[in-house]
Length: 344
Picture 1 (cartoon, rainbow, N blue to C red):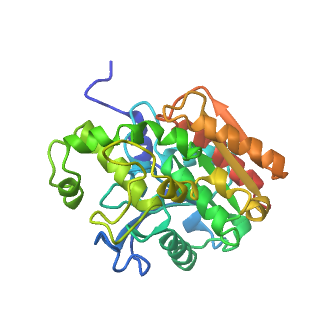
Picture 2: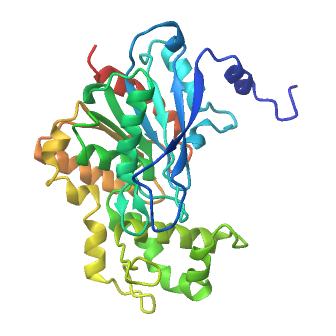
């Protein structure tokens, strides 16, 4: 019996004909960001096996990690599962996916994530994504046209991917969104209802000033960081001590409707009509979700799919038996779909 934590997938990575390039990219868009987060970011780039043997150009997929993740998250050791490099090698070798470059950037913030949008409370993270696109096209042999450039992600990364495709369809011609935030009243409702009690038990200002030094990093800490990250993304307000507005009254729990409207303005369901032409222009609009997602994102996905159908926007929506975690296997569906939807 093999013991001592042996994982044959790790040896597969060591022998992989593909390679992961780790580059440092200094972002102009993140200069002077309100949280003083680093502008120098690591970007992980998957290059297919034949990249160094040819002079050809390759399609690119920009892959966004979920909340608290970075590009490196896709390359961790996953027990009984593959990392992104192993998965891409297998899909390409089996003929399910054409050789592609996969770009894994870093959208982490002091609060754990940026939702990959521009915010006066965190920084210009969508502009950072656009910078990465231009830098990758200059640094690697991509096919630098929208029809050969996809954006994809999971959870907050799925939200960020869909948002980028909505806002910049001239840059991203295809999108794959895995369990991205939609239907905000369900996604965030439970956390917001518990916010007054949470804030009564933890010093939010002290924790947010130095989350790296705070101990213990228990469930209260994680709940606060997640709520703060969303508020910083959706309702920034530099005039307040924290730099953002909470969407509920922190004493009574009542919804602050003006602030909540600012949150809803970011919900893909609310934005779909305004951005319908952008969505209609995509070569592939793919999204999926587990049928018992713990954040009820599947309900938002169903609403989004129904709305897209009413608007006559082509899309592909799938539900699968699962929740919000352990969904890496869904890349076996989305990556081949993105590949097939690109021109020959």
